[in-house]
View 1: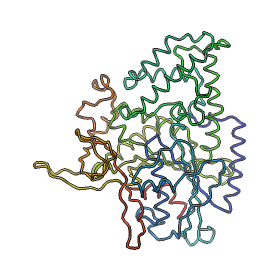
View 2 (view 1 turned 180 degrees about the vertical axis):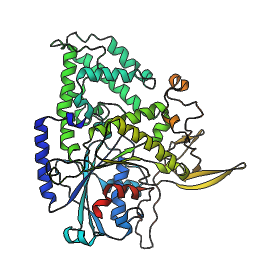
View 3 (view 1 turned 120 degrees about the horizontal axis):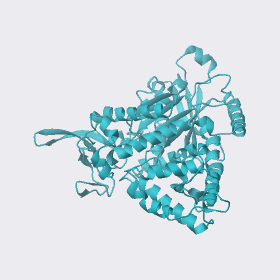
View 4 (view 1 turned 30 degrees about the vertical axis):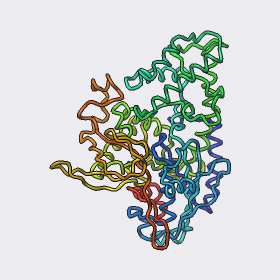
Length: 498
């Protein structure tokens, strides 16, 4: 699908941008790593832990360059793109380490350059390599990425698909008010600003309700309706799908014509520049997902998460490196799909979580017809907020996780104060993976926001505060603890440090 997102003029601009970047890279090798995921999946935490562990020499046994002692140092440098906000690494780490608070979620695109000085493991490579790699980390909201398929859809297509999604069992009750309002509108009537505003606000309210924890849905374009930024209130964000549209050209001056014009403006001035200026410049990509939240919400949320990952993969430009074409076009040759918050489960369930994400990713790859890049999955915690233990319950010994739940979190009628450490039995993920994706059960259709089937996962999911870091005798704060962050690093950048 990515090939249909640009015009010949766009491709010419992309080629010039790539050529300029490659010329600079001949003397200063760099790798552009995209980090995306839907809100609260842990993008900001992942980047902060990624950088902190490399700068502070964290324990990374599966990251071969670090394990073998070939990394001399890692440090931050000025980023190459002056027009892109800097990822505020120092503020985020201060929140994690000093205040034990999770940093604010990604609200817009940002960038950070981490430079690694290393010694190649190969004598041949040491002769020709500078032993220096700059990793340009580009952080952007997954909600924006889910807008990219709109570039290949007309307003009529967008409207039809929006209403088809809105009547799904997991969404129907949330979309009822917006659908009723839309049904009462005559799309052929004269354009009216207040009508357009009411429809847009009702549509946005429906999308925001879908995103709440109870449903935890993922496929919610247009993304700027959830994160408008400085576009809030603009005509480019004051439109909504209309029901029952035909392929006939809308009457000039009608409500449909107004909505269609604004939809096209949204694509032209918001979506297309984001794709051309950022997505087409990436070399590697990690997609972080909060699979636990979707599992909590039930099969409808898992099916929607799979749909979102499918659309995300379809937007990338996969391909292998080629000496001749690399100067004019970047291709993503590795993508990692990472299920975050593995520390909210006992390690005995990690394999099941990874198997669930593998099934999701494999199905998404097949549906997106995605070829040309290596796709891997991992269950990780970029910052580990819990430890593990066991407790006796009658004759049973239960595996538990131990941590400090955030203030206001609840479980079994108990509300936590944000200071007290406690042991929690999080439950087990199901052995039968098919049950996780099965939306055909009668309980799910009757009550999409609540699980009743014994086959569904029973996870006691609460959010924990970041861990209290230990200090050395010299007063140096140790690096942030993690689960499988080293495996993610090895897949994403390990080959460039070989």
